[in-house]
Length: 182
Image 1 (cartoon, rainbow, N blue to C red):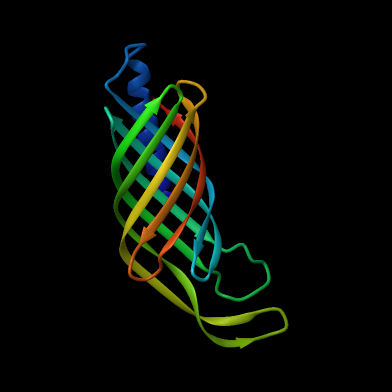
Image 2 (image 1 turned 135 degrees about the horizontal axis):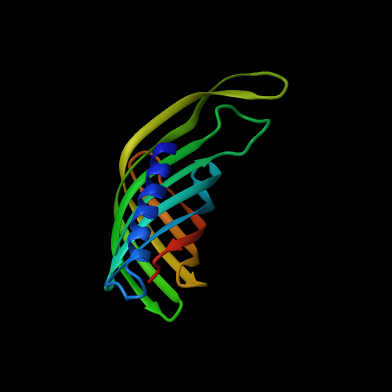
């Protein structure tokens, strides 16, 4: 997962360097990188996540490659900690009015994680559960509201979900956007 995030950062940096090299000409496309934190909910509980994305838009269409990694933040408690990760490719439309942009996307994802099964035992501080892992293909959905503070920096609030046969989840992400924003 860390190599995927490094690849996203490197690719966005290279593509934006090309944009800056072009000077002040208005380009017919926009490329930007987003990253931040959020909350993710499953049937078993809530998780904290980090997220990253590489976005490309032209006219009113948008492509997005996103990565999400979510974990429980429990110091003492049931083991193993729940975990969800996702790599998704999404496509959709967006509308921009001034400094505000709204996007709606859907696509395909490869997602997986860990959740608790049957109780195996306990000690004074922890309960220990069977560790159940899953990996599957899903359908990611997303609605994103972007506010462009400057031409190359903005903020985003994203509502997202992933529908899959093993572990359906959804949540909200807060991100910082860097690049050639629409």
